[in-house]
Amino acid sequence: MDCRTVRSLIHLYMDNQLPSEQLEPFIRHIQSCSDCYEELEINYIMLEGMRRLEAGDQIAVNFQKELSAKLKKQLSRIQRQKRTRIQIVVIGICMSLFGILLGYFEQEDHSQKVMTQQLEERGEHYFYNQTKYYIYEAGSYEPPSLREIIHNDK
Image (cartoon, rainbow, N blue to C red; front, side, top):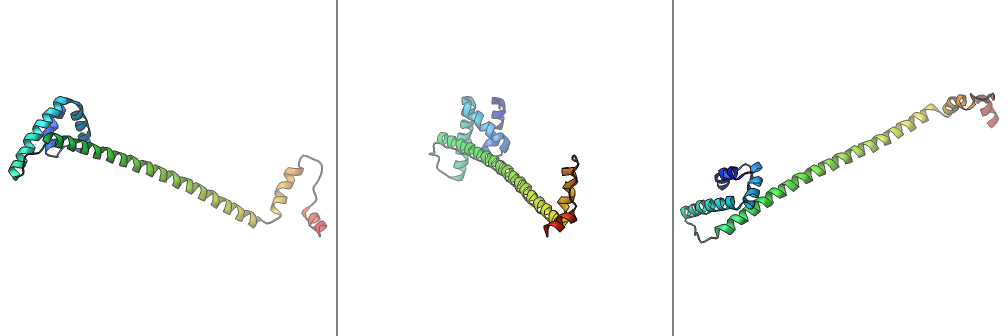
């Protein structure tokens, strides 16, 4: 923010009507620019003094310290809110990744169960019939039939 913009926003700041997206740049500029800080300080002393006089409060307050503390407190609150938003986003991303991984492992486990169930349903002779052609197709050896194997095992 430039000095001209900051000076035009001083009255909004004094009335607590400065939009939150402009508050941090406003405060950072005020803290870095002594001319703008002095202008804000003069306005703060005048407006706050008038408000306290109208309310019947005592005016023996150090307005400079009060303004400085107010600016620091507001900047600290803004930074805390930013950190909180970042933490929420990071936690959300981590939870999403955890959910994806959990879903992947659950799907793998389900696939293994389905495959095991299918193998059990096919029966014990399925693999013999499926693999005998691959094992013996290149050679001249003809494998024994399943009946011969079963008959010889008894």
